[in-house]
Length: 584
Image (cartoon, rainbow, N blue to C red; front, side, top):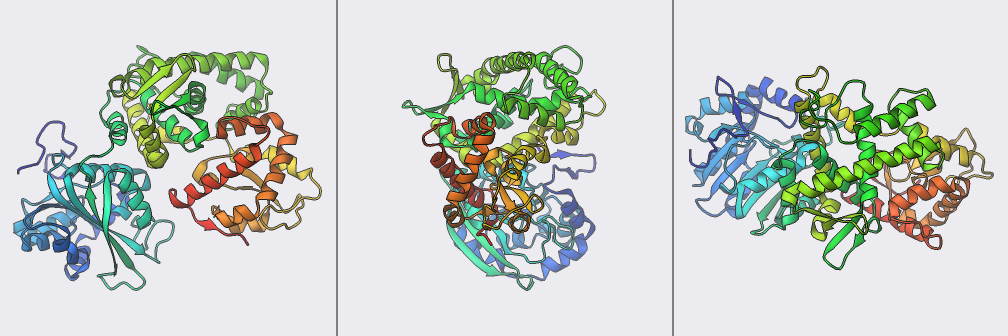
């Protein structure tokens, strides 16, 4: 069939029976559709209308259309009836086989395939794409890759018709009563991400559920692919997908830039050359956090090709191992992430012994040289980054940095999975080096409770003490340390992000992000508590603020930090899908 990739490098791998072995978005969801294929097929066949009402208004006559997640083939047949040159892909073998058996016309048109990446057509094969009731079944960490796949399949100026649930009251903890994944995806969030991928929303529809389910409604969005997508995102994607990787260094650098982009514009220097400068030291410190759990693990977790056999070795494994061994001996602790938490607190408070300071300096120096000689030099054939020896900073194109700021939330999830898959390949000959375990290590963070010990100690000693959100008096019994920016979103245990709150108020806030109105009304209380923390732990407080703001201005840090907090809260509410909390 014209447009199908028959090369050996295909992403759609077929087994002996010809069925597809697919990297599916969510296995329990796919299992449900396979186990209940007949029931689902009959239910879908009884439905009319829905997204198909918009086909003729969305696509020009005779256009080549791909239906992604074609299910029973109902919409695919409708496209063919309307005169479109239509094809479909469906990951459920049960649904696909039932559809083809019932409608032989679909035999060469409904193929095995699905998101995020297992669609076996050449890039630019289609004038239009239909993707109805599919994206909510894609795990959030795979959404970026799924949209990239859809964008690649479209021709320039091609159109994409997407439908997502606007309301689904029977979903609990991202699962419906049947166990299917239903990720919350707001239309505005999807439009923002698609815009950054070169897909502009030109029409929006709202309609009731075609299957008649009460309180369920849908939003349908029509996108058009811009003829010219800004190169920055393509370059990030190129490194993620195509760059040769004999070590995890390139992925670590991209992850560091994603994490640093979460902080603030003041964390980088904007240059008149159209670039930004990111201090090499900041990137090296991020790498220390990433690689500590991997190196501390009892089982060798290889980070380079050939490291499992002893042929090659992680460039900074030796000094980092020495740093970890010394920390273990000093704290009589081998448990992670407890050990990393203890070390980080010592470092932030300026309490490291002299021998550890020297080892830390040696480790960071070796990490820094690895960053420069490795990914900075070779990413995207050496054209993506540059290094300034005078300022000891990595230069990044400003447009590329904006992409890290705007899409880093999604890029990070994608590259962590690729990192885990790469390490599993490096350690294929070793027992215990599995993708799941590597992911656990990559996601490991210092312990929340341990890092809350110092702020709790600071505020317990304050009398009188009041809840930052309600002004209720606090005692040691009612005191709760609240993450102003929820830890579940920003993974931030810094002193400035921990505020004294009444335990009941803290429970009501949960993982909510304070609204702009609430933050402005509580500015004086927030700043008052910051000053208490600063006076009690000046070294620790300054260490953390410097890394958030790119410096510590003694004359203006309160205003700068408040504006930073307010900006991050806005981003969390809009870009990270956080619930907005307006107080009690």
